Amino acid sequence: MNSHEPIRVAILSHLKVGDWLTLLLGGVCVVLLTLKLWSGDLADKAVIRSGGKIFCEVPLSRDQQIEVPGPLGASVIRIQQRKARIVSDPSPRQYCVRQGWLQQAGEIAICLPNQVSVELTGSRKKYDSLNY
Image (cartoon, rainbow, N blue to C red):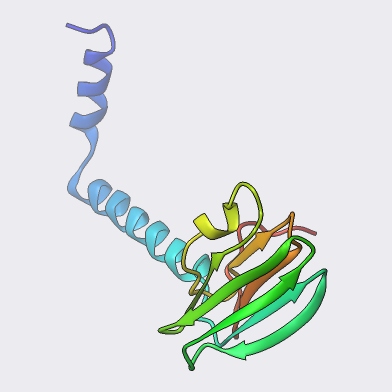
């Protein structure tokens, strides 16, 4: 028997039905608040930048493919089924291509060597963290 076993048994034996319900309700509240407060809305449009300047803004409601010039060559961005992604880029490591589909407001894919990015915008952004 583990030396901590009597302590665990003593604590668990003192918990009543109301204690368990309180713990369960608290856990459910934490999960719901996390989902509500930290998830972004679906995006309305894509803002495409090249060299730090806005190249174009396109609605996500129309499927299309856009070639964006950069210092290394053209990056290809695909808009399909209200999602966006960079499908090809001349950058050596292809991190932005591997980023995959973006669909929530605030998500972004950046190709640093080619200075091309696509950011989705909407009514609310999805934040990784808040800074002051």
